[in-house]
Image (cartoon, rainbow, N blue to C red; front, side, top):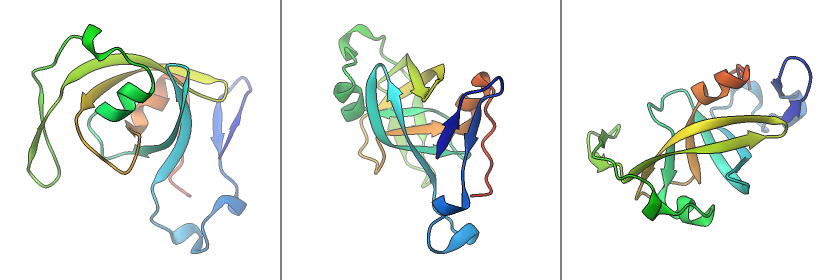
Amino acid sequence: MGVKASSHPLLAFSNEELPPEGATHTRPLQITNECMGAKVPMVLINNGFALNVCPFRTALTIGLDVETIIPSLLTVRKYDNTSRKVMRIFKASCKIGPLETIVEFHMMDITPNYNLLLRRVWLHPIGVVPSSLH
């Protein structure tokens, strides 16, 4: 994935970046970004999420002082109809190449396959609209 700096920010994909199965693949959009100055690999961007989720282990890894953040009383219902408590809500600077924005995260004590789970909507304030072609 390339990030091009111009008067119009653009996340660009080339055909060379497609997996072996081509454009018919169903793999998720996964990126590496910088959050609070720390490089965070394996960040999942998905249209289906209602929240930007930061697992507790990732919050500790990026250096977030969780004790200084106000606790949350929010409970989230997952796709399988089980509930999870949101531990805390915080805002953090996230950056991909030259593009940077503030993202509101809901910190949860979960162990997903990704380090951050982001809605695509977080890209909109910086003028990026990702294509689902690839």
